[in-house]
Length: 390
Ligand code: MTE
Ligand code: CO
Image (tube, helix red, strand yellow):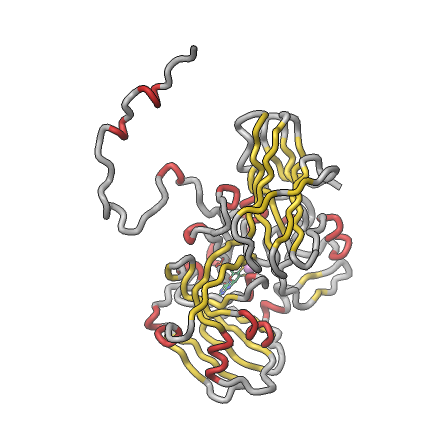
């Protein structure tokens, strides 16, 4: 006979008063007990927060949608305030009729709703030389997955009329960074959007309010926020962000041009360094996320012994093109140390590589496009650590 549990047998404080009435929070916030579920930055990474990055707390989230207030931020010149009334989107260059759209004009084009991940090309970039940051939030948190509402770039371009020589599009932001990226016309016409809503509500200021470019499956840098101009041209512009930045420097010092697509990648979000196992041996839920810029994720494999044996993980939730996928692997933990890894396979058959294989092809000078397999070492006490095994 165990002692009675007062949480069951006693009348608790919260049953002795009336709770908040409606309207206490006209815009709802998470309950105070969840106040540690926040974006975090790594202060030593950058000198200035206006040109910095913070990270989505992926270790604490579930499902596939990133809540708006938790979407990581990456600004090159800070997050600006641009009112809808002051918003203009210009289309110029090799078009029959240069045009300027107001925000209200955009709302009069047919709308689409699409769920896509946005991953910064630099996600996991600090891990090229070896394990550095202790937490999935920091190693893999430059990603969010959101339902966008917006209009198709192809519809806007059709209004202006693209001349036959028009093979490229320059997207330009309105912030002080003057973010500019060249996008091939085929991609722009295929699935690019000008989005003004995220997860049903207006874009957050941090995400480019009132409108941003959505470039599904491609590196986050191209998703220009506070989008103010689309210029049609016959060749790429070779702007700073696509030459000295966002190119991949190889072992011989030469840099690989244009790595647009984000290849298949996955990570176990729990357990992980910020999410140790606190319940001891027995029933254990291992979970994580997987995504591919080339399609859907068809399979995720999980190993608990550093890759000796791989198990099929269970995908749960919508499996959408260029969107995040959620996986689970439920097991009975014997309480012994583990080397946890996950490996994504996408709908093209591509298998997420090990970090060693990536380095064999790319050398050690890279920052961007690190989609190598992540290892967490779990100790008998349930603590997790970022390690690498070869
Ligand atoms: N667009 C503008 N105008 N200014 C910026 O600094 N940062 C880019 C891109 N678009 C940026 C921008 C980078 S590097 C990334 S990874 C994504 O926006 C980040 O989008 P987020 O802040 O919504 O996460
Ligand atoms: Co980026």
